[in-house]
Image 1 (cartoon, one colour):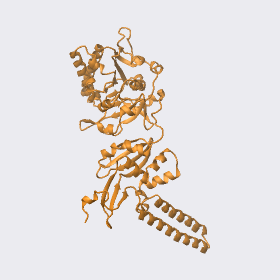
Image 2: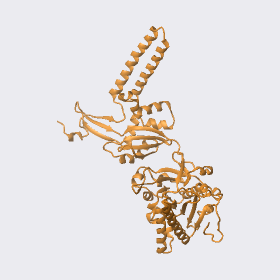
Image 3: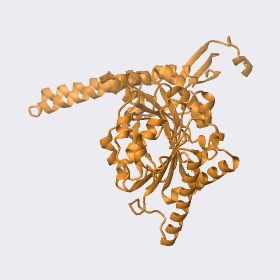
Image 4: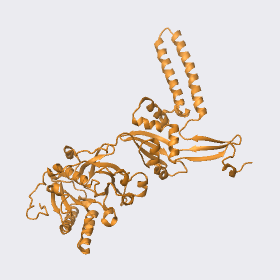
Length: 503
């Protein structure tokens, strides 16, 4: 009698591999072909006999014969493509492989090339190459053979999306969805197309794979469509384009936005896009912009005319933050007296946006610890309470370290641009997201303006990220467009104090 230890020996009897997964068993295939052929022969004979015997409605019998033959031939064809017989009678439950086979047969574009790679043996081979397989060895029911079953994740759904395909798979019982998602990059190499993965919100064991097919909509630099800026909702700004080819709009009012990226990543394109996108609302007196640029005002100089007030030194920035914090107190008191929780943006109650270029300078450029603490206190107060009073902060930052901006965790939205290395990336995204393919140091290099956009929502008093980061790219805004923006309405006094633009 053989023991379990004997099964671990490579020469323990003849070794046979049976593959289990999205694949048809041989007897099912043969049985389906036999049934389809028999039914085709019988019904074709009956239809021909009816055509000959009938004096009327001969063409009706002919049409029936054609339909019957085509249906049975289609069943045989499904069997040939390894579609299980039990699903042929339930089209709604027919596995993805059958529909993939149908589409791949009639179409020949890039998407269908990947579809053909997802079929049957190629899917099993891809899973094996990616490490998404489990082999179970056991004794055969008859004889002394050692049988090895090969299990791979089952594909439960497949859909076309703007970037290519969205494939939902079920992880193996012995493999967590996180392990399955980590193998997305290796799986993409085996399938011949980039693959990203995330856990399925509808199935605890499910993983949704996004297979990118065809050209990347973000590969091309696009100029800012100035005419489209007026069509954005109040409090939002059109900035760029998403990976799905749709317009990327940032909700400015109602949250705080942090832009992080290395030098040359394209942070200026995002800030410039916000400036252009908010201009129609500035002209309508629904938004007021305040600027802080501690690089001597160089970065914001091209569109300085849109700001109500602009700070170019640390002392001016400290005074401006103190002023906005006092304005915040006044607004909250007014809202309390009026019993208002969410006022509509209008000329009497405009939204306020504080745009900070290189926010790390608020920490590094302080002349004293006391001054630094005062700035940090006012900034935290604005970030903590500002959303309720329609006061928002947009800050750009190069250094991803926590010490560079201690109030970083108070920003509700993050735009993560190209990072200099893995260490910097892991300061911006968690390890699970990084291992799942969100790699700013790799995916965004050489693409100025490209980023991962993360929007957080408040649930049970805590900020969480409900969706995976979205790949986006900001429009290119040239200096001529920025210089041509109309000035903010109202009286201005820029000559007495060139560092401040005062209304």
